[in-house]
Amino acid sequence: MKDIFEIARRALLLTKKAGADEAEIYCVKGRSVSIDIHRDVIDLAKESMVSGIGIRAIVKGAVGFSSTNDERRIEEACVLAVKSAKVRGSDPQWSGLPQKSKPAKVAGIFDKKLAEIEIESCMDYTSMMIEGVKSVPSVSPTSGHFSCGSSTKLVLNSNGIEIEEEDTIIQATVDTATQDTPLSTASEFDMSRKLDIDFYKIGEKASTLALRSRNGISTQTRDTAVLLEPLAFSDILENTLVTSLNADNVQKGRSSLVGKINSSIAAEDLSIIDDGTLTGGLGTSSCDDEGTRSQKIAVVNKGVLSSFLYDCYTAGKEKRASTGNAVRGSYTSTPSIGIRNLVIEHPSYDVIGETKDGVIVNTVIGAHTANPISGDFSVEARNSFLIENGEITSPIKSLMISGNIFDLLRNIDGVGKDVRNVGNVITPTVRVSNMKVIGQ
Image 1 (tube, rainbow, N blue to C red):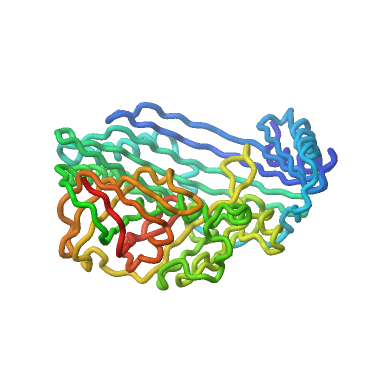
Image 2: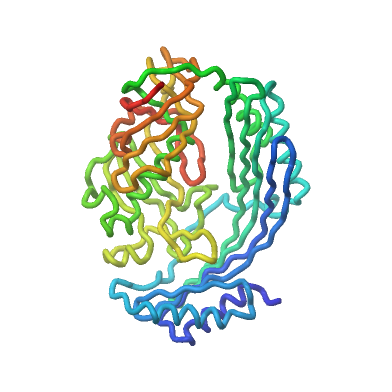
């Protein structure tokens, strides 16, 4: 079998030959290991190889797409992409695929040890996570997952872009529950570009949190200081603010930030940076998935909205440059706008110690039900605790939090020093001075 990258280069020529004005090939090849945990037993372990090609053909501004992982059907896929573009008709707002430019220099996204890891070692690491859970008395694992992989992508287009890059990723998560009544649960996870995760600690932290969350008390409905730990804050952000920053949503009137560039939308000490070049970032690469050079963008600068997130198409509609935010789930999908590494910046201090009265929330459930246009949300707080006179005290049995993301951002009055990578969001615990909490 020919190398998939050789086939990809041939596909570029075939797509042009089939009648495309412009053509783009996105090709990926890689290996992954996946392991499931059921209770305290490894339930399934598998190793997979993946390779395939995604083809975008542009005809009179209309975009057609097809994909294949069969080299024998590559010509057919190229022709199909061109035909689908022709069926759609012309798009006068299309301004072209990215032009050739020098890729950004990035570091920390490939680990040779992780790329060469054996499935037996992966099972050992998964077992370490289970042992970490069981190290805490009266707590057991209920489920979990381990995965790691290495891949190489190739982005080609008819404007001369040809960028090849390899990366690695590893992640692990575990869910736990106390063995005695009243039942309490908790989960923990970690992700990295290199083999530097403490798997035992993941399990231990999940069990410790489940144990601490037992015998929760009721709390009254009120407006109070709410400390959102990284997992909770990132979940809310991704389902509210991130959708509002998407230039496609802005251009279609599906964002409450329309017309608010250079306006204050957050606390004056708060900045939000989207950085596609962050060392070791999970969203880091030398270019985005269209081939646009990765860059560092100040989305919110000292409380002021400074930029939306653009791919090539939305940027062309405004006759500006793409911010390098075209991302793909796989070679079988077209690019869409997404964050790269969203970094929360704010002066930090001991936010718990300086909170006289409030609640602290580890995770939330229901953030996906938030209104992506208005930014309104109502979520259930999980593994939450009272803060009294600067100390975390009693666990809370049941708690709902409701609000609006822009009110939340304006009322952030401090962040902790516990900066954490939660997927593509890098954030510490944030304290919001005045939020509605709904108790029992």
